[in-house]
Length: 273
Image (cartoon, rainbow, N blue to C red; front, side):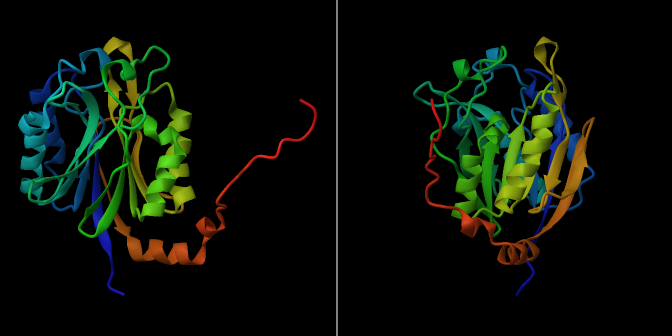
């Protein structure tokens, strides 16, 4: 069998709230030392920072998006596919989404995923400013299937299992995950990889946000068995890993746990209630 591998690069950065130009320049500097890679993955709302109240002010229509045009330039410069974190997208009908654009090596937009689950707890009100997406989106890049998710989606294993059943080779989570929740991030990023036997890239922002909050960082690339291939805890930087899919497919053939899933898990209730 012909060896099937890719190199994936994940960018951890601290976005300057509301300043696209500053964040564009920062991303260029962070990518400057990359010599060769197949896929570059960015964190959630990396171009404007996490501030729900400012989302609509910073929204862009995809046809005229500065962010998407910049990512197109990056794709062509590095001859790499781009999983572009997310930007706040406004439709012609006036609906707002937290959207992940995917661009191929030629800089063409080939997929768009709208965040399916919106975080609206503990003083965060994302759902007040953007609308939830309706469907998971899987995109094929260079013969590899990537399942796309954004931040809070990681708490819903159902979407990841749907990707696995659809043939996902890599699960992606682009995040702006707060430093107040380190344990869920640690556990769930690994769990999604292990339970689906699928490479997983969890790419997070790091550092201060608006309102004196901070993002956790701790971006990581994880293999199909839960082993961390590359990670960065604090600070800004780029991590890389080579993913060998022949090894993943062989592991799946030996450990066929997904074949043991039942069609239904109807709960039998016993005792006095």
